[in-house]
Length: 162
Image (cartoon, rainbow, N blue to C red; front, side):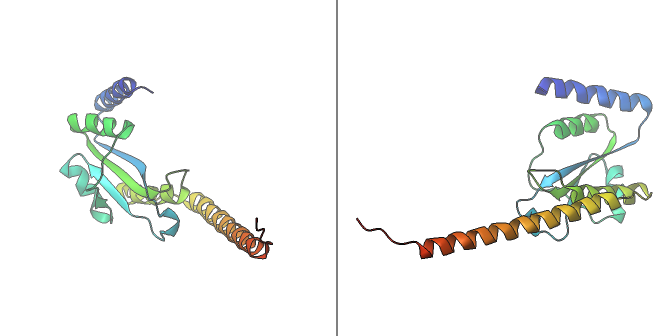
C-alpha cells in the first residue's frame, strides 16, 4: 500500500477509535533479532504514547525501546494515536526477520495478558514454536553432515596436475 494510503488509513482508524471512546490501544509486532535461533528467552520492548499507558506496564518486565527507529504502518499509526492523545502501547518482541515466529507471538500475547489482567491461551503457539525448533535443529544436523561429507570427498579426491 502506498504511504499516502497508510496515512489515510491511520487517520480513519484513529478517528473511529475516538468516536467509539476507546481509552487504550495495545499494538504488537516483532523486533527482528539476527541471532534469534540462539535466544533462549525473548526480550520485549515497548513504545508508549502517554504516562497512563506506561503505568499499564508496571507488572511486566518490558523495557523501553530506546535504540532504533520505527517505520511503516506501525509508525504512522502510533504517530496518529499520539496526536489524538489515546493511551497506546506498542509491544516489540524479539523475533525472526524472515518468517513468522509463533514463540514471539506467544511472548507478546503473554504481555498483553498481564496488561489486561486476563488469561490468554498461547499453548498452540508454543507447540508450533517447538515444531519449528525441531525442524531447524534437524536441518542444521543435515547441513553439518553434508558439509562433513563434502570435506571427506575433497580429501579423497585424486589430485590432477597439469
